[in-house]
Length: 239
Ligand code: GTP
Ligand code: MG
Image 1 (spheres, rainbow, N blue to C red):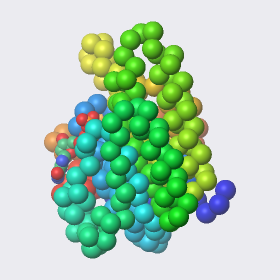
Image 2: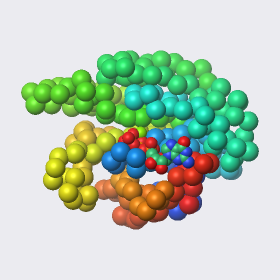
Image 3: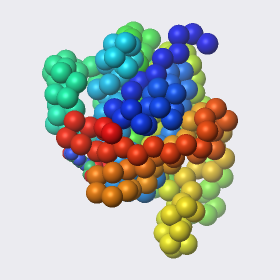
Image 4: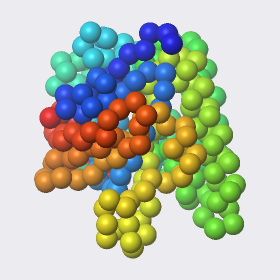
């Protein structure tokens, strides 16, 4: 494959268990319960993706599909300070698109692809990839349809990752049945085999003490089932 590079997560420990950072040309999925750090990781990657390759970056622009209205420019500014980057330039290089329905979320990928054809992008973020699908397809009878649409979306993401050699970073929730709440180990990501098939690397996140978080490689053919502890600081994800 052409020039695969890795984008630093901001945490050395986390980078180490995934081969140096999230990989270009494929999809990395982070899943876990609320406040486990999915959106904070997304914000950190928005900044590190713009660093030069020799500094753990992707040397390109970032597209951020925001489905839960969680993108915060003021957070980007704080993270830029840590990496000694000009916040105005970094913000200018992040294309944020708010998605309102699952259908809209799918349509946005065409616009994203058009932008990527015109400009060098390093990273595409979808935070969250599955939330709108859960909202739009609620009934039991709609599950097959939801999975079909989700599959189309994920196929488009794979195509974009490969065509433009960008890293694709998506977030996902976990099922919150009463049983799953009782046993953290049983928490399963949304989207079943569709997500399992499309995501090259899957990261299970959970809370530790205070601002500490734990990431575990989930079902990977490439990486050992290692764990890493990281933290969420003012400057984004760190050790
Ligand atoms: P959901 O989207 O609700 O599923 O959660 P998430 O996994 O996206 O969680 P998120 O990344 O939002 O992490 C929330 C945690 O990040 C909070 O519990 C805080 O510890 C930390 N955090 C959130 N905002 C800030 C901030 O502005 N500054 C700092 N230093 N930490 C923050
Ligand atoms: Mg979030």
